[in-house]
Length: 171
Image 1 (cartoon, rainbow, N blue to C red):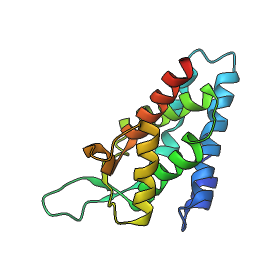
Image 2: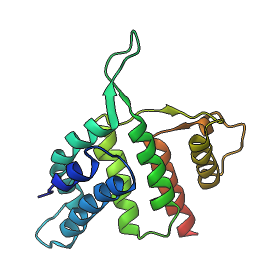
Image 3: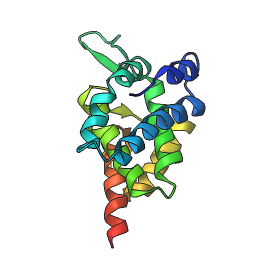
Image 4: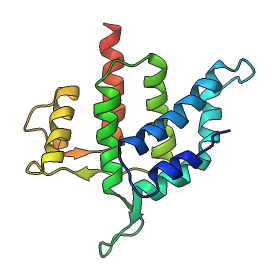
């Protein structure tokens, strides 16, 4: 069972590097335990089921009620944008194991996407922080400067980077 309480403690007032690393640590330790347990037939399915406790915490961290007239539902927060950036810089730009890449793929595709913790965030080429995201995305996905998708960030970008890494490692 996942114990999300340290995520709440580390992320309560400050969503920064330590908060994001705690999220990854808690989830990846559980992922590894499930994959090492010979009595669990489908560890990825079990991981999705066990992540329910964490999903609520992530939703509160990464999504907010819309303040835009005519738009209902939740929109991504700046914390979500920082988490995507953290994932690109501190996870995807480093050499990682196949297991960790699969973990990231399941986290973004199944846990976050399927629980509506997602959104497309526009990036501003004049903002220093956004410029960093654009540059990393451009390099990791081999996008040209004129590409429309270069100026947004979403879960799909993370998944595409993971898939691109997997394909390039097969060559």
